[in-house]
Image (cartoon, rainbow, N blue to C red):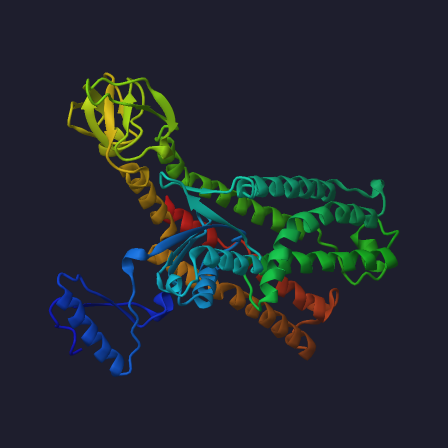
Length: 499
């Protein structure tokens, strides 16, 4: 506290978990003595037993990752913790958004001073996240400041994947339900219907449920669990129970035509429930599909902003003696440099921020100001990239690089807003991290409680005379998992924040 009131010295405290250091010191050095004075007090702090490291705020870089495979709200905080734990000295902060499937990693300059370059750091982060069963690709910024990934390695859009899985599950499950509703003894023994149900339910469990099972196994290898664990457990247990009931019914009641005959044959009330995993997976995948559609809509704002910039600009040269302008040359907008002269004709979009050097016109600046009336622009007036030329032909001198233009800054602000988290969303991430383990514990406790009551004789005998104590208790445990699966936390919170 004795150093808090030193003139020209300010302390910026930060959490150790996010910066990798106890505190940061910032100082605007106006004179060499100011720097010397600050360093003397910094050494005094170190002598007191505190660790202090000089941080170069100006040389920070932001690495962007595109992450696929985040299946529940607990994935973003898990990725953030993994990166901060693996690279504490190189990473200042990490922000992962399940809505945009992006991670913004802010790196400091300390690792570069030790020969650990950003490219090597990027490769190590990719290797770490891929080992966690995520599909990760780096996103690079072009000269205009737009983030672009590798088109050849871009994964299939989530909306397409979940739509295909939904229709696969929905069609097979609806056919199964119609078969159960319309089956009659005239069509054959009841066990034939059970085998047809298994034939329809197996592709749903393997194709659709397999996606959740693979995700759950990946988390299980790291002694962790997520929402996919609940879906995989509930659907797999219901499917395996149905397969066991099918084989038992085939062995003891193969000729039974209805449930009464099946009970008389000694099936012990074991009834296959192939419709349960089918309906569960169908509704879960429907929610995932709707979530993917919501993600696409929330990112449409960035796409619309990027579309405001024209793909090409018409560069002209000026004769220094006569002042006349030569012929146009079409070049990509990202290749424009400060000082270039571009011609903007009526109806064209201004390719970059600049100043009118020849001609006069009216510019529609509604994309910036919201004003629908065009604004007059003459020689010496500034124009903004992305606005529409609605008047005459003008020549504009580019005054800012594409990455520093107003449009690029707007796009960056929108992207940062989508990657940042509101307090309620951060709270939802914390709840989601504990949700799955709590549900698993409750499900096991439900099974143990009912099984203990059944064995102790505290329940009426009619409760367990058909299914037996074990199956009777197991069905309650499955019910807890099934009810907990369609958790709206992962869809409602990020979507509501973005909309």
